[in-house]
Every structure is written in C-alpha cells, then in structure tokens.
Image (cartoon, rainbow, N blue to C red):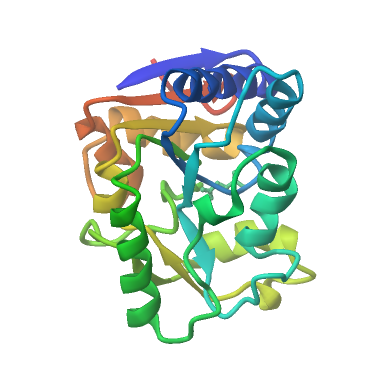
Length: 242
Ligand code: PGA
C-alpha cells in the first residue's frame, strides 16, 4: 500500500486528480470507478479544471460508480446520480451512455444488483477505482460486517453512516436506509485503487486501514491485500499514522 500524506485538503485533491488525469492520458479509453461524498469534490473540481484547460479528454472514458441509494428517484437532489452530474459528468466531454451507477429506482434488489454486475462486466473491468472512506472504515457502502461481501448487493446503512450523511438531508429521518453498492470483491478486482481521506473524523479509520488487522469489521483494511492501492490523506486524516 502506498501512502501519500499532504498538508491540506486542496493538496490532497490535486495529487489525487493528477493521478487520475495521468491515468486517462495514458489510457484514453479507461474505465474509471467513481465515488461520491464530500471528500472527492475537490478532486472532481480539479479534473474539470484540467478538462477546461484542454488537457484532459474524456471522450472514450467509461465510468462506473460505487453505489446509489435504494428507493431514491434518480433526479432527487441527493441521489448519487445527481451528485455525479453536478460535480463532474455534466462538466466534461464524456458520452452519457458511458456513465453508469446502480439503479436505485429498481425496487427489486436482485434485479438491480444483477443488472449492475452485468454492466460492470460489459465494461471489461475497472482500471482505476476511486474510493472515499467512512468514519467506520466503510468503502462504497460496504459497512462493518462479519464477512467481506463479494459482488454488488443491497445493504442496510449503519447508524454511523446515516448520521454522517444526515448533513445532506433536512434530517436523519430523510436519509434512505438502504443502498446498492459494489461489493468488496468488485472493488478489489480493479487494477488500481486510489483512496482519498480528509479530516480528523477519518483518522482512526485510516489508521485501522493501514496498520490494523485485515478484517471485515474495517472493510477498507482489505486494501492491504491489493497489489496497487494508494491512499492520499491530508494531515488530519493521516494524524495517527506512524
Ligand atoms: P465523505 O464520505 O467523503 O462525505 O466523508 C466518504 C464515504 O462515506 O465513503
């Protein structure tokens, strides 16, 4: 596992964006696995800036997102579909037909998850998977558990995640209780993984991910077994690392 510590959130975002940009430049038809949440917002803003400078061409890029809330209409302001449009996809020259998220409007979880696995397979596999990390060590919506879930599945969000995401809704009651997410196995199949972490609320999760035992109780700890995983954290998120 490669660890890059940066002084600030801005520096973390730039370093991460430049890794993604270099990957696109070298592999113009790559498959990017994308993440939502506050942490990657700065990274996406930097990618948009590079695109507007004429330095980054998304014409052949395909994207697959990690997760989506179940039972939230696609155009809801807090759906991950809307997030991706707002922060990246509507601002770059990507073909909308090449962008994918799990379909949160599909009530039948089995159908939604099988459909997404089929889409993932049809892309040929993720080249670079971007991840955030939850305060409880979750990746995607793979919450602490007794096993590492393999494929795309439906999850019940933990109380800690509902509380963390309540800031985006008018109250915690409004936060959807379920989501569709890539499994830990799906994530681990990516050729490269780039995890970004910012702020002191992530320090313990980052420490457990890097230095703790590999356990499904800290889903991100599985990244210790990935052959090409990089963590970029700002000073606060990396504060407990040796
Ligand atoms: P955040 O979420 O970037 O909003 O902190 C990250 C995550 O929960 O994966």
